[in-house]
Image 1 (spheres, rainbow, N blue to C red):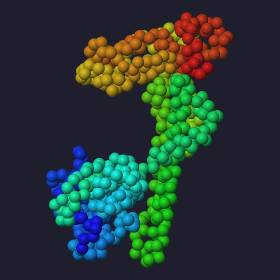
Image 2 (image 1 turned 120 degrees about the horizontal axis):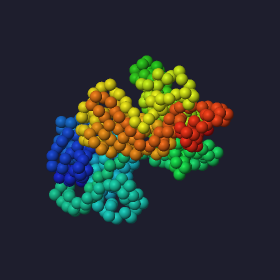
Image 3 (image 1 turned 90 degrees about the vertical axis):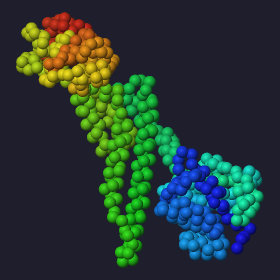
Image 4 (image 1 turned 180 degrees about the vertical axis):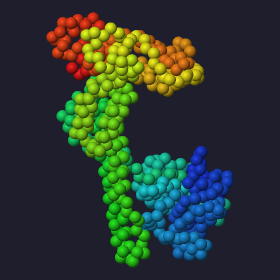
Length: 524
């Protein structure tokens, strides 16, 4: 029965082999070093002999759902395996081909051809598309120690690539069923599915670099300069072109996947009809899923490409929502440099209006309880005598119409972060009115119970439900009042300033020389 390479594997050596993957994680086989646990998955034993390895696995994992396929070249041993209830799927492992995928390959191949058998196992595992595969192998130690042939050199390279663990064992077969003093190497390697993502990514990036349009870069740079600092513009241009290339490659792969799926469905439907419906043909919902997947990808990438964080931070909640709606509508447009420039340009064109809207919306909120009394007045410089409604004073009182407790006032951890969200939102929106004119710090220092300040304002909360705010930056507050006065037509128009001395004198007296900053905000 024995041929020259037949050496049945001792149980202790199998146990040591299968324990090689233990190092914090249980192997895919699920066999612990000193214990037996449930084994799940499909295993291939490509040099089964009379079944020592197969029998060991079945014994240790007898209650599990493990499935084992075996290969054996010797006809007599193959018959013995079949008679014992094993599934013999092939004879010569080096010619074995299959569409089946395995969770593990456990092998004690012929000592004289261990390099060829282990190489074939690695290549078989590498070709799998749905599973990673663990390989456990017992081979002659000389195969590793003396890589004189091309196949041994290639094996050494692949074991290094896959970070294989190798242990040398002397006397492993000294007391075995068939004895030999050959030193063996126990090898464990986890072969991961082919991952072409990095190669695809690099090729996509390189393709974009080669096809890059300088004029498109310049146009996008110009539009971006409104949102980011000058030194960041080129970085954002590079970022946008990278995102476009990622999107193109992702959509291409999605399309290819659906094309293959469509071919599969069409073919299965066809052969099902040919065979009287005996072959299962899956329901084809290809079209709806394809559109949905592409739309999700497009929306996600528009969100990344039109990232205008710094500009968004300068807007109030209302203005941010307006801009977000504008950006959301972009998801129906195809992603390319032309459309990106068009949308950035549209945002640039509306940026002054959005900033002005932010300032005015805060003014309206603050003055809403008194401004309605003067809603029909025009040009307050022509006759108004009160300043409690047409401009924001250095102190304001804002009612929330609900009582405040200690937690509402930030006493939980005595920080601005723990202040009631309504108060915090209102105060942060107040700061938005200052941001078009100056840099603003959004954090506050606690100076007393329910009282906080930063370099722009100080505010104090009262239990009866009101918040008192003292503005510290009166120069910027003056600019805000001027911008809002012009917005409500309470101040002289440009024409009146050119022709009416009284109008010019009034503006100079009330607001001083603020034309430059205000005109910058208004886009003049």
